[in-house]
Structure formats: C-alpha cells, structure tokens
Image 1 (cartoon, one colour):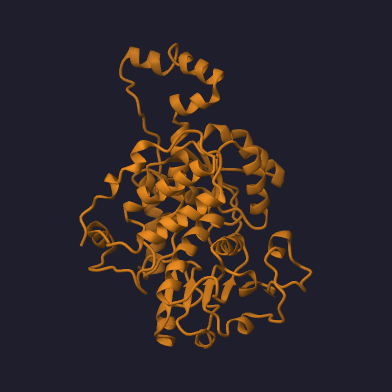
Image 2 (cartoon, rainbow, N blue to C red):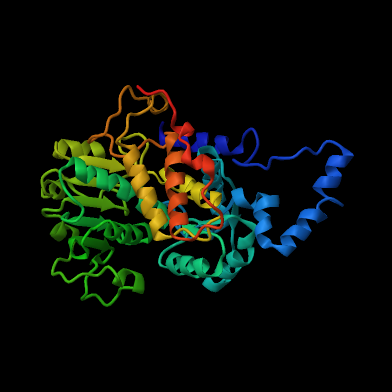
Length: 424
C-alpha cells in the first residue's frame, strides 16, 4: 500500500466506528437492583474488608490478576522519537490490543507527564498495586534502565520494559535457531550489534546468558565500537566495552558470523555483507526500513539467513511472540517479578516451537502453503496459537522454580489441550 494511502487508512482505522482501539467490558451481571447491590453498595464492602485483611485477596475478588498497565512517557515512540506522552497513546493502546488479542490479558494504557525521572518512578510505583504487572514502553535510553531498575525494587508486581527484554528474548530465540541451521554455535560466533539503546544492550546481556563470549561481541553506537578506551560511555554501555583496536562497523564486520541491527535504515552495505563469514546470520530489525533490504541481502549472498522486524518478509523478529505470553505466565502464578530465568525459559519455548510441524491454521493465517524449520523459518509466526500455552507455561514454571510466584502453577497449564490443532 502506498505511504499516503497507508497514512489515511491508519487514521480511519483509529477513528471509526469509534475512536481508539480498546474499551471496558463488564464481567458481571448488572441488570437488577440485586445485581447493583452486590456490585456496589452495600455488597462491595465484603471484598473490601477481605482485601484490607489480606492484600493478596485482591487477586481473588478483583481484576488485578489479569490486568497490566502499559505505561510510557513518550520519549522514544517507535522510530519517531520524543513526541510526548499523549502522542504515545495510540501505541500504548496498540500494546493493550495485542495483550488481549494474543494472550487474553486485559491491559490499560497510562501516559505519564513528568518533570523529573524520579517523578515518573514515583508515579508508577504509587499506582503499581492496582495491577498484576507493569509493561514499560517507549522510554528513551539510558533513562529506561534506571527507571526499570528502580521500579523492580519498589513494586510488588512484575515490571518489564518490553523494548529491552521483549526484543532481546525474541531475537535470541531466532538467533539460536539460525546459528544451529548454519552449523554454528553462539559460544564461538563473532557477533556485531549495531545500536546500543535499550534493545541492543539488553540483547547483548541475554546472548551472554546463552553462552556468547563478551570479547566476541562488538557493539556499536553513534560513536563507533564500544571499547575500553572510550571516555564518553554511560554506566550501561561501559558494561559491554571490550579491549579492541577496531573502531568502525567496516572494521568489525569482516568474518562476522552474525549482524544484528537495532539502529536505522540502510546502514549495512552489500560490500560489508560480502565480507562476513560463510553462512552468516543477519537480523536487520530497524523499522520500517531495515539496515539492509532483504532483496539486496539475498542478491549479495545465497548462504544467508535473513530476518527483519517486518511482517512482509520471512523470519519476522516481532515482540508479540514474547510479551503477551510472558505476562500471561507471570500473572497466572501471581509473580512478583520477571527474572532472568523466566526470560531464558521464554527464549527456549519460542525457539523449540519453530522446530515443530506448523498447524494448518497458522499456514492459512500466514498465507503460506508450507513452513518448515530452515533458513526461511527460524522463528514461529505471531499468529501461532501454541505460543500462548508453550511460552506462558515455561515462564510460569520458571517463576515457581525460582520462588517469585505467589501461587502454584495452575493445573491446566500441565495439560496440552491448547496445543491440539490440526497439522499440515
């Protein structure tokens, strides 16, 4: 669709038949006087007293256990930059839509106007107990790191910055599979990461959890390679600085096994791609225009595995493969946080699903006649309904194993009825 047509279609979609993408629905009858006496006065006093006696009863008598707040200050909206809290509202409503569509999680968007970072932290911390989880979104780096760290410590519910961890989880799941297909291991891979914002740095941290060697990972920001000799690095980038004489993308790309872009359009040239090692993996995830166009990449190399952030190409690296189901699993065990073990469990669950036979329902939704684990299919499609049961269960079990759950894994999590689908 041409850009001008897409622009108008998007405006029409958001405005008609009523403005916005979400609404509130009632879960209880409210038709009679008796209904209203139970829903509000005087009946509502009963659960109020139960919650006052034990705050955990909020999960029993209110919607808290299936409610996530999607919160932003609008300082890093998609690829559009700092446009303010209110301008971020369509994106936050969009995240709420995805939570509901893919995992049945109710979500409400909250846009915060603040003067200081501490004011934002205080605002979120003061409302956190109303929800079962907090999804932070579109907050610029490096502030996003400090904000998340502070809120994790102050809140009794999971706090998860999806731009950091959701991107990292889905990317690493796809990367592990791509390396396997290419006959390589993450332990030995030479990896280039272009972009050192929230997504890039969290990605490097998670890759190291899966065995990537720090000295084999070259992270670049606008100043070039992040190395020990630089004096302009904040505390978050400094953690990933390495001892190297290499300074530019052109320097580090030679013999690289992996290129991951979370930066901007057309920053990886065909000449640089040619200098990568045999059987390279390239995840060019800048949206809407990747670091190198897939058509150009495939023209340049016939041994490449290529992924992007776009739905109109194979191997879409899409956060929706992760965050709805990560929160689903965390909510269902009343987790107090989402820890590294839960993130790693999500990686493995997403990764493993790509190796299974693809159901007919998914093929139809994807408009594909056949999908099979290989260079053109290293990660599941977002519309695969098995993600909900597989990823949620893995996250819930990891929460229980690490003691951050407040109730046992639900019994129906151990049943695979949700996975029973016709297969091609």
